[in-house]
Length: 468
Image (cartoon, rainbow, N blue to C red):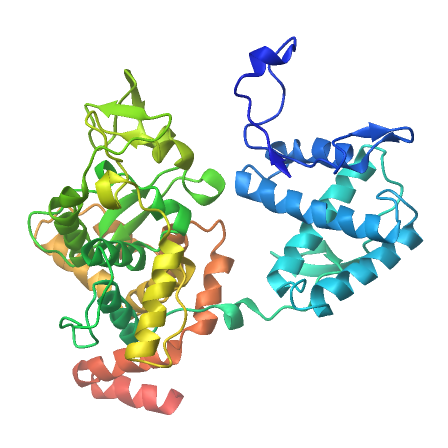
């Protein structure tokens, strides 16, 4: 598998620039041929399909790579068994059976996780759908079950690929850190023990940076791609006084999943820790680092800067462009820096190492932590506060004192599930309801009732006892 680059295309003897997206995967056979005496090779068809992905709901280069790898493994399997990619249905179904057996029950070094198998099925299903549309394939290896389900008051036809494995319900898969484990994780990132004091055995680096970024993820619920490529200039200013009303945070459009702009929020303490990191630890890490093709930024502010002489908004930059941004004296403009002003982006490894150290040193039950688990942790903690009325009370206080916090009216008027949906960037509130199934709502409401029971009149208390 090769990744296409348009650099130097003028020397290729072509009449115009190739119509292939930058970084598009290209499959090449071992003999470097795309056709032979029998006609075009299967890799040629796969490459044509891959080039349609940006316009068929897969704009991310990461998706292109995943689909290309799935197609490559399938082609290798078919070649091993002497089956044509666009063969008969009987041949393809038999090949899919042996492929599933190898991927799900085969040797350990070839076996796939259930999620990886689901990706294989999705990619190959899309490939054969495209091939049938183009008239290349007369049959597909998959069997599709058709049914109906009630959606929004009417029956809708549903289709399910039977090659997919049985999966647990979403609320069973949902993983998050309970409040005490979340605090333990924050302390671990900062090189502290469970009591919040220095851990004499800690040998890690950049604890201030790691703790600040960990607090950012746990406090905003941003995805890994979203927070990794944040710029230091995109951090909102710290309010003059501590506030219980959360501070709005804009998630850049081109860095968000699905390229959907949204607002999330962050609490005052987490934002204050970020500003402390920027003023101290990040300032000490600044250096002359430059990438191979730097984008030099001058006159930078909260909204944008002059990039290579042209005024540009931060929101218009993709992650691969953000990592190339440097100041006039060098040094990355990303929020998280390593030595010499180099950008730091490997947060998955950093979080796993911290979780492993906590498990070995302090708490054997502590789970592995990936950035997405922190996102779930934010969702659960936020929903609990919304249900308990914490943010509503803060908004009422802000309104009573004349504070002009932008989120106060929203917190007072919106439904908790709608608020959480908007913060996480979901299209439907149904997705947000997954968190309700995992959250102990009875415990939350019971705790809220016990706190307020003393102020409730006797008639209401008697009615409650009789009802429940």
